[in-house]
Structures are given as C-alpha cells and as structure tokens.
Length: 256
Image 1: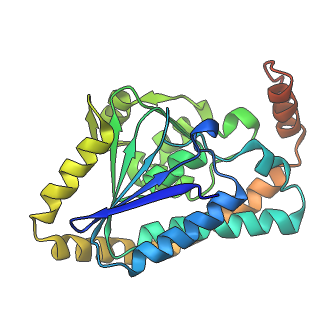
Image 2: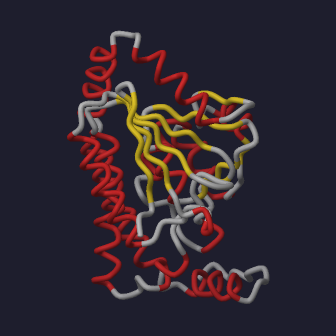
C-alpha cells in the first residue's frame, strides 16, 4: 500500500498525502514512505515541489495508534528519527516547496506544512498546533517553525492555547503566506508555474543561504522536543488526555 501519490509535469513535482480515510494522519509506515519519497524527489530534475493532502484535509497529525505504540524508548526514538529526517529533508531540499493546505492541518501535520518554503491555505482551512490538548508539546520542529513565523511570544501563546486559525486568520497572524477561495491545489499549481518563469535558481540559492545558517538551531530545537516529548508521554495529564479521547469525553487535567 502506498500512502502517497506523485505526479510530475513541467518541472513541478506534486506529492500528495493519500490516506483520506484517516484525514492523512501520519503513522510509522507513512513516515518511512515519506522519507523515501522525499529522497527520490531530491534526485529528480524538477525545481518546484507541491505538497498537499487528498480528501477532506491536509493532515490530522500523528496517528493515535502510533502515539500509543511509542511509549517504549526504542520505538519512540525510531519514530522521532523518521519525523526529524522528513523535516530536515524539506528544510534543506535544493528546490522550492509549496504546501497547499485545505481542511485541518493539526499538530505534526501543521509542522509538515510549515516546514515548506511557502504555505498556501484555503481561507476556510483549520490550522492548529494542538499538542497541548493531549498534554504534549509541539514536535517535528514545531517550535522552530512557529518562532520563525510568529516570534517567540506569539509562538508560545499559540502553542499553549491550542487555538485553531482559519486560513484567513493564519494569514493575518503571519502563519501562512497566502490564502485562496477556490481550489488550493490549483492555486499552488498557478504559483509554481509563475515561479517557473522567474529566476528560479536565484530563489533557490537564497533559500540555501537562509536555511544553511539556521539548520543548527532547527536541529537543537528538535533535540529538545524529542527529550521533553518522551517525558511528557509518561505524565498523568497525557494519559488522561488519551483515555478521554478513547472514552469520547473532555479530559480533566491536574497539571501533573
């Protein structure tokens, strides 16, 4: 089974998450496939990549079954290795990457969208870093992406509140770069076609300058996320959040 579709045309690679029955939630198998897909894309001759999701949303984040299966330290480290490699590949790819976001982009799914160079969202998309709702903190470089786009104080508040922004709200806050009213994939294709008529190699090299001087900070933040996230997975508040989700009720947190 493939969790992605890939189409190439006119120097543009379109990579689409294809697990619509699960709102494109990422499990360990799909993360491993995503690593290989990105590696293959790195090696092709296209200069622009579009990342989108099939079905009713972009990506609902990490699959609950994967979260429950990573209480063991070794399993957890393997999953985090996969997540961090995906983010680094997107961040350092010598191509321009556009994320086309519709419907929900939540938690790890939002980190995935923000790891791209340009975020184009439907005006009614729903963007949230709602790790706080399950007693966790952003990972997948979430702290880095939010700090880059919102600044430290607003990044903290966004993560702490777990609030979802519509596409229009996200544009006002600076979380995304553009919103559209029609099909977000069509808008991304139009943008990619426009960029193809620009001095594209100069744009790519500007990306490499900026990202090259930031890569160590991204790595350091992901190291910290990995450390703290494992500890948080064993707190009473996280266990309560998972139990509440399974029992379809609101969690009762105790700050523990």
